[in-house]
Image 1 (cartoon, helix red, strand yellow):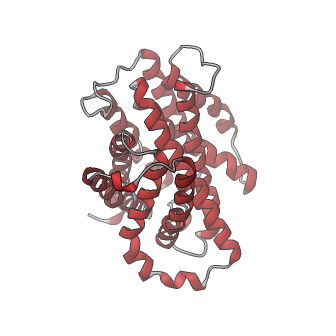
Image 2: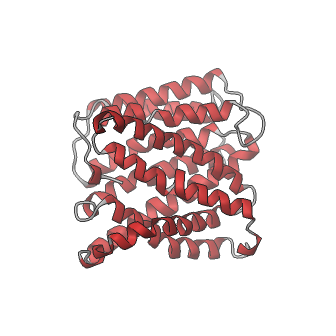
Length: 314
């Protein structure tokens, strides 16, 4: 099968793996603080990426101080804060038996990426985008709260909503921050360096926020789950995704990435749901999902149709 036909299939595979990641990650939150999950995920992920790191170690000779600041910002915002907020949202949503909300709200990432590109990179923003943003946000509200009023205290479902959107904003910001660094180095080098830099940063955060957790209490089952994340839904999925993105147009990529919400919904409403019984979605929740996904698709097709180059974003 030629590259142009296998590309979307690889993107679909990566998107499905990212949906499954929430399934694996949720189980880890039952016994491990989110801060330590982020630390262990990046530590084990970097070990997996070591062959790439050593193969492209010449990258150190071409990076200047500004590049390192960019990499540090990318790591802090996207790798650490984004992953931490998402993991914490999954942990808190267990009490509400709501697997769908923190997972599906990740589809808001393009909204933040486009807004930040307009703000910092002076890229044009379309009228359609301005119209569809509140529509997408309305859909996200209905996914989380249905037609109920939003609680006025930052706890419970509102906190889950805020954390999930915060994670989407952080990961959307990563796309913008990465643009300059990826003009100099490949996504493979940038990914390996991000995982490396995330280790000390996430360790400091873990020791500060959850100093009483002992790594010695880590079970063999949890270690195996981290290894699965590293090889499949973590570093493995990133490599698969960018291999597929190399010869796939932006609009086709967006359609292929719908595998993520589809698999997420299947997990939520079946016995695969890690919170126990299948989640019951209300009519308002279902309408919210359709509104959000339709808005994101419409925004994606509002952009210029062009092939996406492998080293353009991460």
